[in-house]
Length: 443
Image (cartoon, rainbow, N blue to C red; front, side):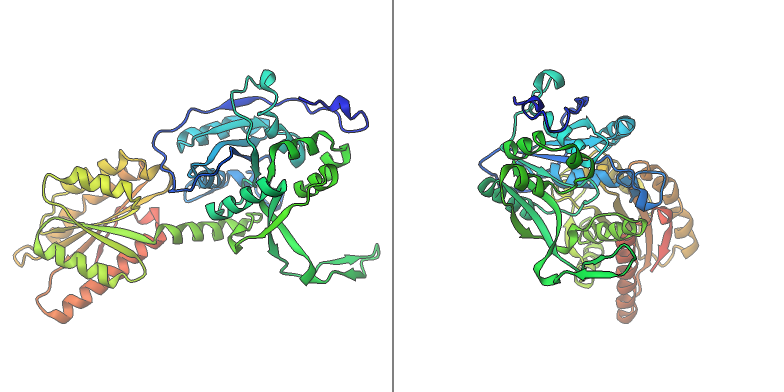
């Protein structure tokens, strides 16, 4: 390995970081991703202080949906089969916190590295894991291409990553860009306009970026102290020190970076929207329950709904189906029976899968009351036990709600009841409000 001694006029060697490698998780499902013909790794610099956020907690560790932001970003990469290793670079004082996050959410293929004082120093520390095998006791295979991405950009898709990685393989470097939204101007020392750039000629440099590993590593070896202290653009480094002109690929609007406190609310809204795209409705084989399920399937037009009619004794295959298709919205329809035993078994079975580890699972128990002899108040009392069930389920990141429907004989009233069920269920699925878990709604 080349050392910084070859460049006496350049920066001094950075003190090696400490590497902590996690055990692979067995319950993380990956996407049906394509394979690439070369090894790829990811470096996620996550050592920022988040000063612009105005919070005492660094933004990468701020929670939304009861989960740290950085966990969402890690998940975006670990779900891709062709990414072999994910290097997370954090400040020394955050190592224990990061280890807790990794184990709590069962992240895999993660290597933790202590970062430097600046962004470039942190990234270089992350790259060194693959080269300083004696210092790090590293068993990681050096990748041919390395992707660098911000820990506070959780919305990155595999298609873009594949384009960026492939372009880096062909050109030595590649990066995502976005059109400029505002015109860039230069000011004088007196605070007056000096000049402006023609917006159409320029682009905003975004993440992810990817490089041939040897190219970006060589660029960092040659960096000046000024580069390490004040530089932020990796593409410029490989152009300046290696002569590699990066291939630029326009990315989607979702590449935005969580920078301010308001961005956390926007990120939460995006995640909730993605989680509410599909649901499954589980029924027994009773005709009335199946009828209601298919009415929900037709009426919940903004959600892709699958109806699963499960005979008694086949609950295991039902749960396997839910887990395999990653349904995180489940509507369970029962008729007349106010016994919560079946719903308890369902919640317990879901809790034993990987589904609620990363995202809250919504379970809505729809009780269809056809009994004219049973007073409405009795149903309310019997189903009130759902609060105790919901309290236990919430500990497993499962949000349980109750929904009571009195079956009317009149067709028009029945249609109104179905519409109300869809409205309430759709709202619960979209909002995922943990405060309302355990509440019994009436359609």
